[in-house]
Image (tube, rainbow, N blue to C red; front, side, top):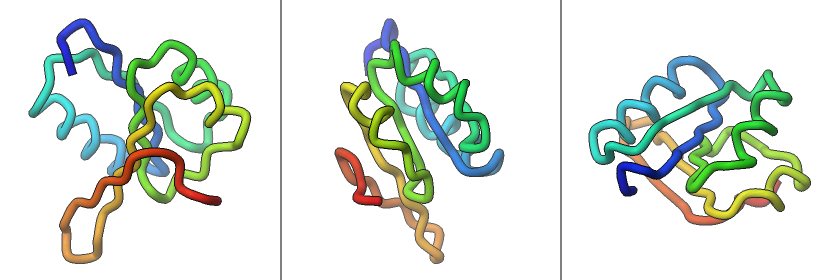
Length: 92
């Protein structure tokens, strides 16, 4: 992502959020903002202006929020510590 991009992320817990933030910051100078799943108001505000939304695979975003996301990247953690990514919404 370019340095003027805005990356927003949604995670189920603080640990996952910190992991996602670290990954983005390692590979991109883009601005990063995040929210936890238990804060729907913040999530709605986050996705409005984002160039890219990252969400852990455990996050099930409501359909009305998915419609407003231009680019969504799902990140999944495997039990072995590996990282998997899928583009687009994951079926609920």
